[in-house]
Length: 50
Image (cartoon, rainbow, N blue to C red; front, side):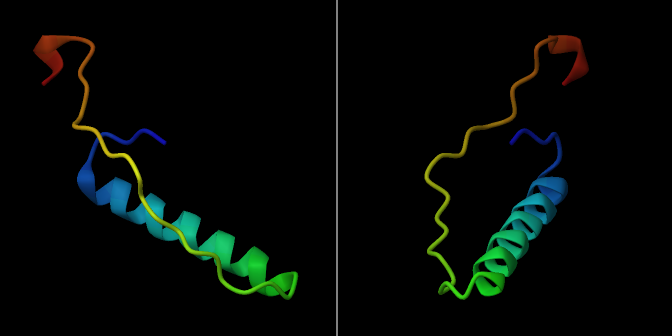
């Protein structure tokens, strides 16, 4: 997933977690362990956009 603002990244990660946990609950599975294993700084393809 790629976002351009930290606030948006936080929201997207929360939404992904909510959806995954909802799917697990709907199927009777326990909530999975969700870990962020990689995070990278923002990448600008054009220096003038930073």
